[in-house]
Length: 236
View 1 (tube, rainbow, N blue to C red):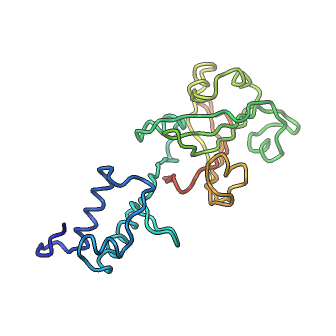
View 2: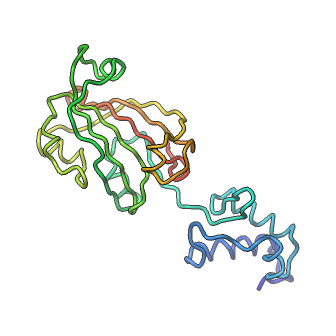
View 3: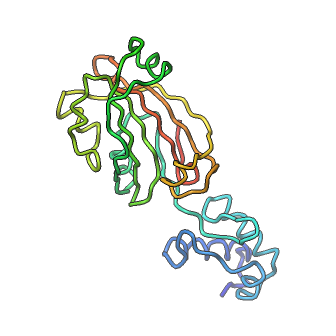
């Protein structure tokens, strides 16, 4: 119970108690909290005290309020630093998460003019197109579409369901991805994207697009990432 005689205000006590229970796994991501009235009765405090505590926890990103449904423990957000050139796999490992991949498409294609211009390839060029669903701790998080010049056609023979593209490129051709230039936009989930990411159609997504370069300052690939914005935090 909370201590009404303590110097620490009741809302602060309640806030830290809920935060501790989240940290200890008593409340798990997606769990629904008791209503404000029920929490007030449980801890013998006012609804205003409960509301102040839960509002502070929402600002800290620990809780989220869903209109008409109640207050829930927020799903974990994963961090990605766009200032660093890391493979998706290494980025996951850096935050203690387990990376995964599911190959969606792997083929030779004739991309549109915009793709060819960004890759600095002549009109009517063909490219290697690889599309993968990227997983974090077995949760679908990113749809990753990459366009490579035909120089990298050996990728079509590789196991792309698990291996890191960066590792394959380095092992097979000595290519090291050392820098990139990227843009970030907001987009809405198509029916296909929603089905792959287990979200609702038209949900907001992050669209990150960019070109990566190797140690010789040559273009390696054009990458387009569709990211579940509710689960990812990008640092730029």
